[in-house]
Image 1 (cartoon, rainbow, N blue to C red):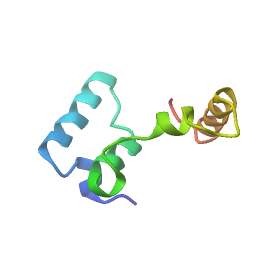
Image 2 (image 1 turned 180 degrees about the vertical axis):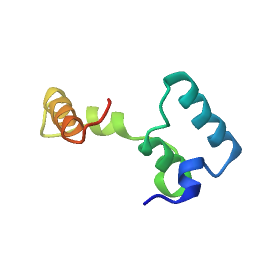
Image 3 (image 1 turned 120 degrees about the vertical axis):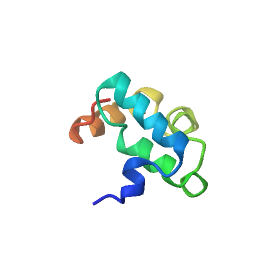
Image 4 (image 1 turned 120 degrees about the horizontal axis):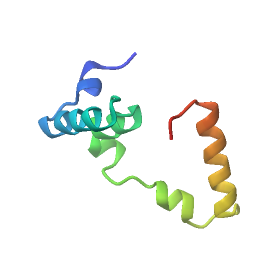
Length: 79
């Protein structure tokens, strides 16, 4: 279940961005994008994926990429 305001976007700029994504890709904006834009002050305006994937870790960058690819495949993610 998703809140209607998450699906459509709360702010006009988010609605416009979701519309452009749909227009260019032919698909709705990914749920992760909708969630991050829903409450930027709560979820953070800065995505930290690069920090997680490239920062200090006991795992190599290649191992982290492999983990991400495996999880994406299991979740049937388009990316």
